[in-house]
Length: 251
Image (cartoon, rainbow, N blue to C red; front, side, top):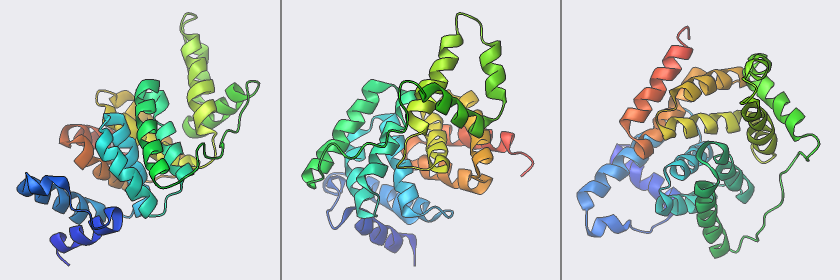
């Protein structure tokens, strides 16, 4: 099957028979887009369509490309992702892109859910409380990154220790501990989020190592970053691949 036929079949699977609006005004561009994303990128590597749509959702959220996000929320439901999985993927972006952009994305998700009669709010996935969010977050942090986390907290300047505490309690306690997505999925999505930001290569390298530590191998990381390419462009994709190759140079 050639890539044109593949793209048609994949597009219908994701979005149904609705014809993209750009075909009325920019058919050449839409052909290039469709054939590349849905006829090539979707078939590279061994991620399934659910994993690919989760990646698409977080990259679109990070980039604040909200009309495309809204379309892909519907596509995510079409390939079998649950409302909980979709919400958790978007929530996972908050520590890296901030609350305002995450709320923008949540509003788009909610519009799609309402149109499909999905009752809001969906069930809570919270697993921590005020007393244990720091300890549980720190535990997850150490599981991902190792004992270097303890050294980072101990060596932080006194006027910056609160940042290390926020990382443990907020980023990892409030978000990574939640149910709905497993640890390997959350860490893979985080790699895609920080890669999409641009200029965050230090964090990209850290999360490459974190992914390896939780069991995501190099080929999976390459496939995930390749899937980000149509949504974040070649410069950020090549930078992220460079980080993968540097950190996992022996693989």
